Amino acid sequence: MKNDIRNELAVCGFEAVKALVKCNPQKITRFYYTRDRMMDFKDLFKSLAERKVPYNNISEGELEKLSGTVHHQGVVAMIRQPEIPHLNTDITDSWLHNKESAILLDRVGNANNLGAIVRSAAFFGFKNIVIPLDEAQSSVTTSSYRVAQGGMEFVNVYSIRSIEKLLIAMQGKMLRFGTDVRGKTPVEKIPELCNEKKKPALIVLGNEEHGISGIVRKNCDELVTIPFALDLDEKKSQLIESLNVAQAAAIVLYETRKLAVHL
Image (cartoon, rainbow, N blue to C red; front, top):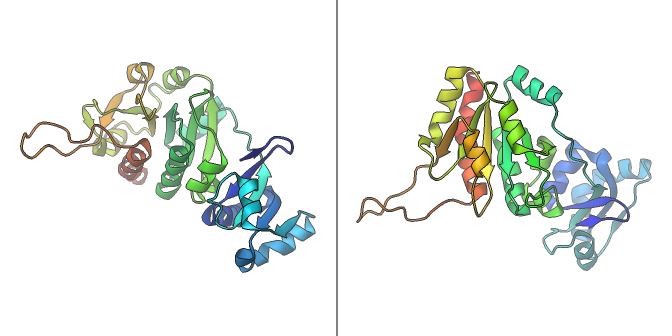
């Protein structure tokens, strides 16, 4: 939940706040907790006091008001509203130099899905995520922070104005993979293709309802798909049309992680 007057964002959920405290405690501007959580964060209180950052034991109802959710798990840390840096050539050049892959979201609108993708990215060691400046794209919110389970502290989120321009700019520099149920390339081929070309991957994950856009399809090197089950009687029909984008992301990133060993 945003506090527009203070330009703050509520970070809640035990794992999300624990990671924030461990990795970036300097971001915290206010800290609130229930009595049950006091001992979990007692080591933090001294540093907050030294910085004159307020911290208080409050009720669960007050935590719900602060965070805008009942899923606060007894702790809320307020931070400055994150400013998502705009992706520039210095950043993409560093990706290429360090052989770092990246994830590009094509208007993934659900904050929980964004958080789950961030969690998978952090788990599998992918630290670059790009989101378009588009009303259809979820940005960093209280919900995405909580669902990411601490993953926000281990990834870099960048913004772009044009998905098409980024894909064109990365042509020949990164291998551009669009995830598409109609794709012809099995997802497990990603590491092999990247290793052959000695290039990192740019993985595009599509909108929950429509998948990747026509512009993305046009500007990808490969359209990858996750193999699905067949109807055992008919031997031909797909039982479920597609996976949730966050589930698909976990599978794609699991397969893609293998290329980091070889590049």
